[in-house]
Image (cartoon, rainbow, N blue to C red; front, side, top):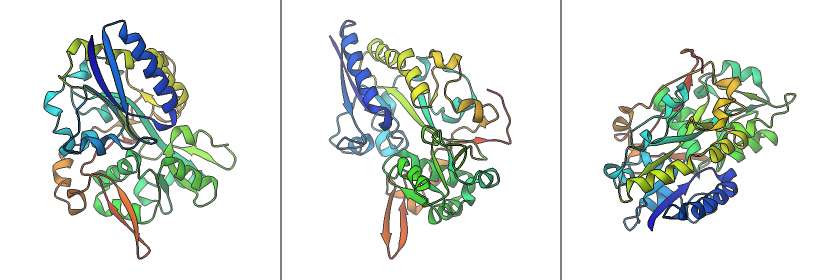
Length: 336
């Protein structure tokens, strides 16, 4: 019997179904001679995966599936296992698209899904003429996951540090994305940048779903596999995770962008947002040169997670130690 240790930090609002799927998968893999053990991280659990893996006594897993991007972006964490990874991105056929181009990073990181962030707004006209760094009073979240960090890092890379600081100084930043959504519902602000799953609740009369001028900001999740496990076993588990069942569930129930082309949803629309937003946008790939430059910035040097604290009525910001640009540019028109 071959043992596989999987670390999982994925989509919190869909986690009950994820966990049920993985428990059933463990039973089915037993017949293939694989004993799958899953350890969960994130909301509802004692630690985020990046917090645990940053510890000097952390036990490294055989497989990782994570939307906690610090696992891959913080070199103090990623360097622990990056030289010991299989080329997992070649294991599963991926649907070629601008969305995939925007999140591809390494042959060892297999893009699984992305959460698209779009506007939930009471002012649709303002969304049509306001670029992301020019908002005043925009709500977004979460300080406690990768969403807020990715928004800020995207703005920092494309428009610079001053623009990122300005956006933060003039925005309402919530602990979690649902907090930004509730801020619009409760009248605290007029527009929030939220997962499309929340924005789809817009009634089309008082509240609206709108796509940013630059396209949706993407929060990706990746799978990677360490050579601590036999390749055949790691690959079998990866193929079973990225199955029709789970991919269809994400596309249908989470409105996520799903990259494996084996899922039936790819043959339809792959998510309710896609006909509205994706077909007219082209992707911008990860800027590898931006990370080394960021490491010289004081605000980025010693912190691995975003924290906001109130000091004399002002918000102070410490950001993660790296950046990825995961949005689309309408000026580069393409069709999906």
